[in-house]
Length: 322
Image (cartoon, rainbow, N blue to C red):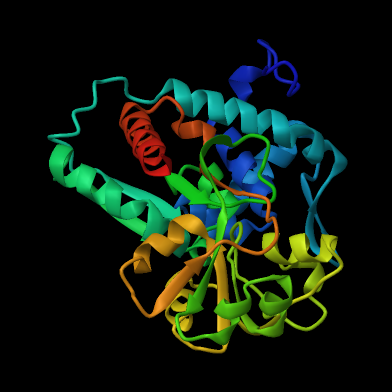
């Protein structure tokens, strides 16, 4: 692997292997100041590391362009190799001692949409209280987390629906969920529950797929509205969306408005199954199932505590989806 980098037995003694970690971070960030913050060192120290890397590889590594600092072709060639070397080293150095959940005080950082908070996390908390009362959860929203933070192992798990994911990430399907409609019990549409009746009402759109800071919706966003609207578009139909929200809890409350229909994954409707003011109906058209995934960094794949948490969540999800 080191030979691919241009490092052999003769010249490897001239390279401080800590520089490979610096190279990995600086190529990911393309910003010396940000790389220094991530490494926990000063900006001059990171600049010095970059200077040494430039000398060793006889290449500028990063050059300033109109778009900011840009990796050279040689640096682009090195980046995936360096990432793999760093990952292999970090995995090899992971402690292998047995994990005892009953005695652990570990904090697991989990990025979860509020769909996951409504459907999955309450059961996870009950499990932790019984089996691992010292373990704490730090729940983050999709807007709090970047793929880079996950890749670096700074976030333990991300649980959400994803359109795309980096190929290096490990992932596990937790369940597939159908869709249901929430309708105020006094809404006249219940007397004509059909496609025609469905389209005659105002609707609530709710979604937060993937990660990162969201953007506001406009009337031109119909091509990326998601499962419900894609299913309608395939039938040559469009619904009248009155409210766009990224919060399932809010959408469930909006279902108490007589003029609105809320179409959400069925598992989420369990949160209001005892609300007699709202009726749960099957959509009057077919909507493909959505898939909830659990995703994690390859750096954490062999961590014994992490593996225990993954297997616990997998078992809980299997029970809930039944």
